[in-house]
Length: 187
Length: 212
Image (cartoon, rainbow over all chains, first blue to last red; front, side, top):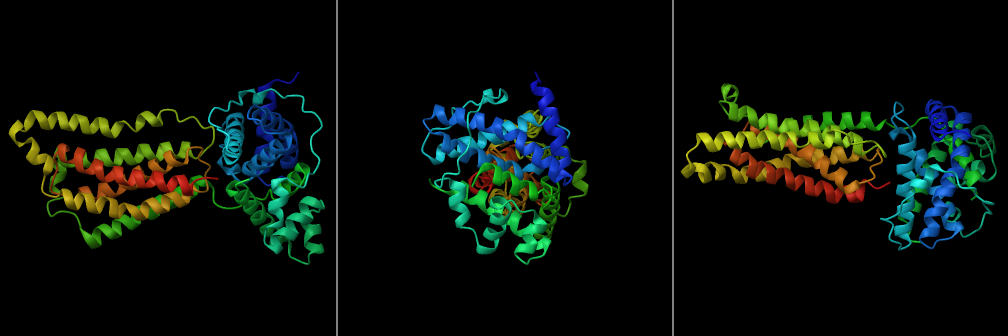
C-alpha cells in the first residue's frame, strides 16, 4: 500500500512540473486529487445533511481554487497541508452559503481515501453549469469548447477563429469568473 | 459541467499567469514606503533636531518599535496568505514591538518623576499623531491589501488587520521623526491607538477584499 507521504511527495512533484507549465503533469495531478477531494467533500457534506450533488459542487469549487491559487503553495514545503487547507476552506464556504454552520467541520479524514462509489452524472442543477451560462459570450464559448467539447487550446483557437493567446486569456478569465460567481452565489 | 471536463479546462490553463504573491507584496511595500515618504515630506517633514536626536535612546526607541512591528507583521502576513502554512515564530515576533515599548516605559517610569507621567503621556502632539498616522497609512493599506489578493488567506479579517499593522507601522515610523513627543508613554498611548485604527480598518476591508 502506498503511504500518505509517498502519495503527497508524488503530488508535490507533479505540482512543481505543473507550475513550470507542464499541462500533462497538471492533468495527472488533478485526476489523482479529484477522488480524494471527492471523498472528503462527501464526508463533510453528509455530516451536514447535504447530498452527493452538492459535494460534487464543492469538488469543482476546490479544483478551481487550487488552480487559481496554485502560486500560494511554497514548493519547498509539503503539499498536503496546503491542499487540506484549501479543501477545508471551500467546504466551509459551501456549507455557510447553504446555511449550515461550517465552523466545526473536521475533514482530517481527508488523507484516507474513501472508496468513492460511482461519481458523477452531469446533472443540470450543478452550480458550475449554471454559472457557465452566465459568463460573457467570448469566455463562455472558449470554456465550453475546451471543457465540454474537450478541445485543446489550439483546436479551440481554430474552431473559434481566435489566436491561441486570446483563447488562453479567455480561458483563464473564464475560470476566474466562474470561481468568483460560485463564491458569491447564494444557492 | 462534469468534473472531468473542468479538469480538462483547468489543465489547459496551466501556463503561469499573474504576479507571484510574494513579488506583488514586495512591490506593494515599495510603493507604500514611497507614498508615505512623499506625503510625509509634503505635509510634515522631520523635526529640526532629528539627526541630533539619534543620540537619544527615547527617540531611537520610536523607530525600533515601529519598524520592529513592520518587520514582524510582514513575516506573519506572508504565512497568512499561504493556506496551511505554519505561522511559526512570526506570531511571537509580533510581540517584539510591544515588548520593546514596555522596556521603554519601565525606563521612563524610573527616570521621570511620577508627577509628570500624565504630562508626558498627553504630550503636545496627540491630535496630530492621531490624524497623520492613520491618514498617511491609508495608501499603504490599500496597496498592501490589493497585493494580498493574489494570496489565499484562510482568515481574511485577521490578514487584513495584519496588513493594517504594516501600513500603520510604516506611517508611524515616518511620523516619529516629526513628532517632538519622545516619551514611551506617549507612544504607547497615541501611536498604538493610531495604528490600531488602521488595523481595525484593515480587518473590515480584508473581510471583504481578501476572500477567494
